[in-house]
Length: 198
Image (cartoon, rainbow, N blue to C red):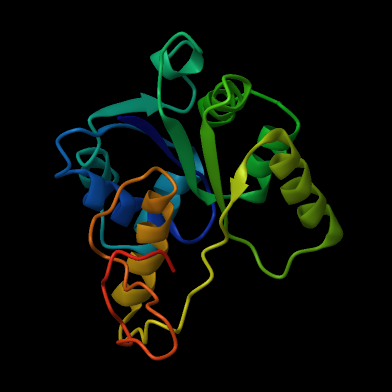
């Protein structure tokens, strides 16, 4: 499997980092990373990770300015792309096919080739313009996954909340890293890691 992981300039960079961390040991998954300029800035603001260490988690790293990168062409086959976190600016570019960055161009390619594009928007509250962009991106085929925490799994730490969201993102690509505490029914074991769908 070949996945593009894009991080744009919104808060919540840890979701993208954790996604790369979880994918790193999976031998059958090849990751291509794009970080916007503001995502690199947020890495320093929000985490203890350096940009270099984040990039080391990926199999291949592309500059957001490189519109001639392999992933800018539909002939370079991938299994899809996750934009995590996704800023409203990047969302606007995706919804309007305004491909002036590699993140938006790669997302546009994924959509036009009918591959799976997952967008993880990180903004709140949302005004009507934001909601309109989310609707338009969904109409184009994007899957919208706001990182809203679940509480049926009884999270105890911030890591529990992050892992649940990341695990659910992986579910969309048929990947199970064993980090999702899955719902097993109201009478079931709370926090069960059973493989039944939640």
